[in-house]
Amino acid sequence: MKKNVLVFGSVSGIIASTFMFISMYYCSRNGFEGSMLVGYASMLIAFSFIFVSIKNYRDKYNNGVVSFGKAFQIGALVALIGSTFYVVTWAFEYNFVMPDFMERYSQNVIEKATKSGATQASIDAQIAQMKEYTEMYKNPVFFALLTYMEILPVGLIVSLIAALILKKKNKEQARTV
Image (cartoon, rainbow, N blue to C red; front, side, top):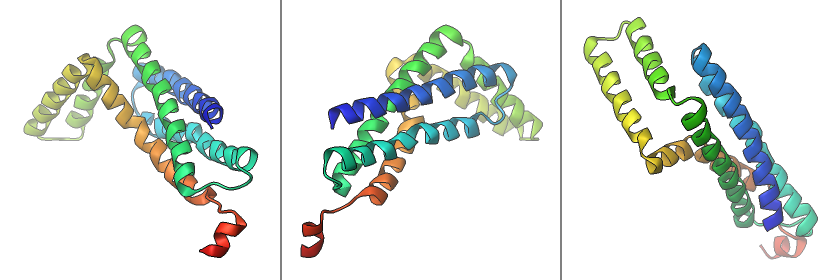
């Protein structure tokens, strides 16, 4: 199981990291429109390897049988490894390629609020919130936690769905139930 999880978790992480690295660089230079859509789509593509990992384990290593719990465990571990790649890649990109990201992003958020006709109180609240996020991003622990919060829940949801779809009892267990 370890090899299976490491291989597919690494593949998932490389895909998520590559998409994120390229799209964040592009979006930060050309506006942030569509960046969330691209980001979550790339996460789903990367986490499709959760299905592959569970199916591979079930069919090649476990005689065509896998419980929901074991399937979810495999999926969650693949998601954790893939998410860790993503967090490390974003830390590198944020600190060495785009150290001005938070300033650019904050400016974009405030410009959008202003153009949408938001009240000055709402704009001031946005400014305060962006300053708070900028400060939080300076703390490596919060930086990592916030970044994990972007991707890991997606991986856990995919793991849950994959475990439900791919769980398979052996014939003897099915008869006793």
